[in-house]
Length: 381
Image (cartoon, rainbow, N blue to C red):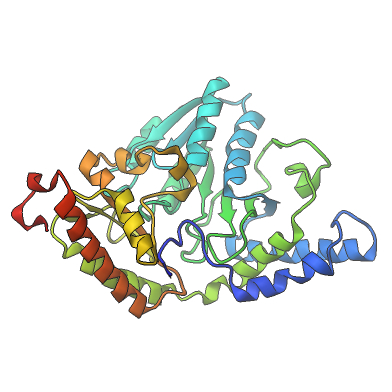
């Protein structure tokens, strides 16, 4: 299988697995226990916390079940803890579903949410963001890298504007860690292990000590009283290891492969890049093939042992058009024909050449069968 769906999840790195294994069968104790095995497990958590902190350079690392829980804790925890000061939250219109769904919940509780629009390339408008700020604005949440189109947002400028008005900044870094330097000044950051060759089912919310935040889960008070429940030690160990080795991941080589594949796809008539070409994460391709149904393309690629997606795998079971592409004002045909290919450190040039050939053949075949083919130029095939 040629795996080109690394934005959905990555293969567990062999070094990560090796470090995790003893915590399933040998050092398996509850890290809250006071005996020797418990202390060993707790020491493993301490090391993992340090490894993550070394990458993100933030005060407090709260381990939890993944990025979705981290986003929920960040928004709900901060807004509820600071509601005496204000009840207004600003987010970008192309945030992950776990942010947007949390915003809907907060709106139902009486909070106010403003959504920053994006341009045709999927970049937020900073002037509009600043104009949205009100006296009761508490927080802004803008992801550094979009999970569907790979665009890199101007987070440094967002931080500068927000802090000028005393506003807390949260950023979902799930798609960015391991690939980009993290801007200084973020107040809360969401991390995910399985997007960077770590295990599924674990993530973190990083918080600076000045931030007032409430827990959203009641219990025994683990994770600095912000995430109760016995910690998933093997997974946390794996996350720490993934962050420790992330600097060795060769995304320069990945970018070379990405550009080669993208250039080939854009030679196909009536094919368009979604998102900014320059302000883009190294491994992401999101293109639209007019007169092609993206889901049909995914099925045909899978039949040829190529894994890809049409958008975020986290929300694919909801069967609705990509909110990211809609926010960019793409046409129905462009949205319907979208394909996301996300490369990883395990891919090879040979795989990229094969994928390019198979995708081009599939586009031609699907267009021959498409009722929309005549709508476009004669050269669409």
